[in-house]
Image 1: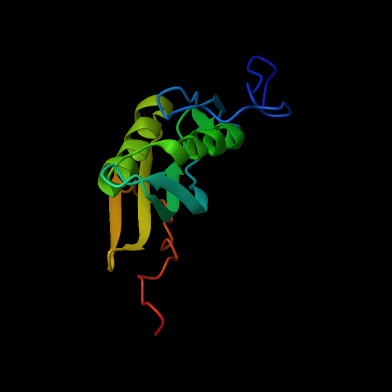
Image 2: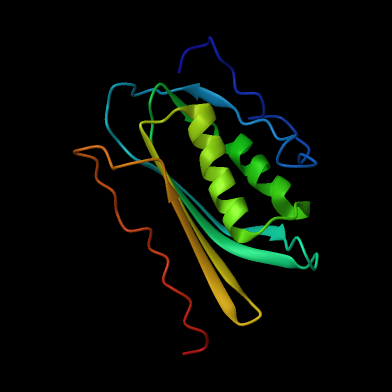
Length: 152
């Protein structure tokens, strides 16, 4: 990485943003620009709030992307995801919104997100979004999160 961009949050005490809209995602130059590779972030303890009841919802998020000119700095991503703790949104809106924001701001070659939501009211909801077809030659492993099986 060059000295032209220093991460905004890395190495500093950083408060959790008050909302996803207030969260600042930080992007740094891709150290392997021009190479086709995939990056995976897993957030197995993601939380947000039900927009109707205000009760907490829990999910295991998996974000996969093939970088373009930039990569997302992981601490800023953690702060962004943490900002959903007090955010009310349906599973579909939260999952797709995270994927679309990352794709719009970072402009990777490809991005997908899987939101594996734990059941409330007896029904687990899994939400998936991707930016388009997988680039030719990109190895994309399974996200590795099994569907909810209960106590089976």
